[in-house]
Amino acid sequence: MLISHAHISCSLIYKPAHSLATHAHTHTLHTLTHSLLPLTSRCLNYLRYWPGRVLQIPLVPVNTELSNALKRGAFILKQNRFVSLTVAEGAKVPDSVEVDCEGLVLKQKIRLDRLILPEGCEWGTKVTKDFLVGSVYGRAKAMKD
Image (tube, rainbow, N blue to C red; front, side, top):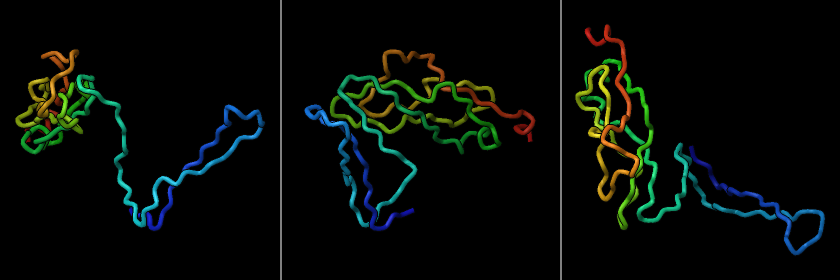
């Protein structure tokens, strides 16, 4: 979806500290003045970051087509949707951490060993080797077909 010749604005209402007037002043800020503004489903999230800070990064499953259980209708019941990471200085902050789903079977628990650690990152202090991402659930009857 595109917005043509759009001016996106926001209004700020404030009372100056030095003024004792009872009515507020209104100002309008024009933040974007592009002729075409594409709208996406992603939102911008600004993050205050410094090297060594622990970040909560979302988990994203990959290689789901290589798991017979997931191809036949099983799903991952997530226990944790995020994992704690620290990013080294100069490294890119990752958008997500991938969970390798290759070869998953029913009732299998997905742990830390299935997570693909991005380059320049380390696990957070609270992430242990028995960190549980989730479990694979589905109907066993459907898996036998």
